[in-house]
Length: 118
Image (tube, rainbow, N blue to C red):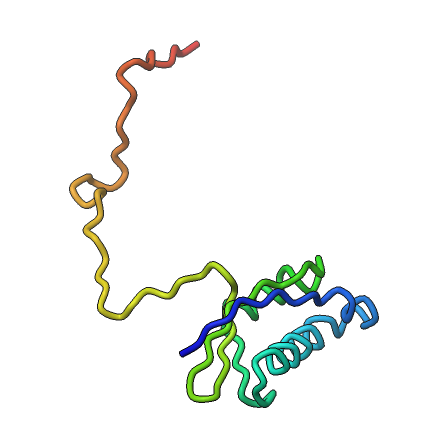
């Protein structure tokens, strides 16, 4: 399962597009560039939900270069935002430190003076 890190400049493409269509066309352009760099068919490129949300909220407005982590498995390229690591299915969560404390109770700083009324 080879993996690649790609930085794709979407600004040079999105500047020419109407504002109302930038989200859809930005995702399409991202898919085309990933297919080009990984030498796969455009139909075999999958964009993760996290990357799609980032495209909608951030990249289609700011038009910054998108840094993408691409995993290629059985001819299918799956793109996710760079820096996100998915936990392995065998990992379990560590017990919370807050488990022993009651809800709503807060610790007060002993050095802090009580507030004066009036």
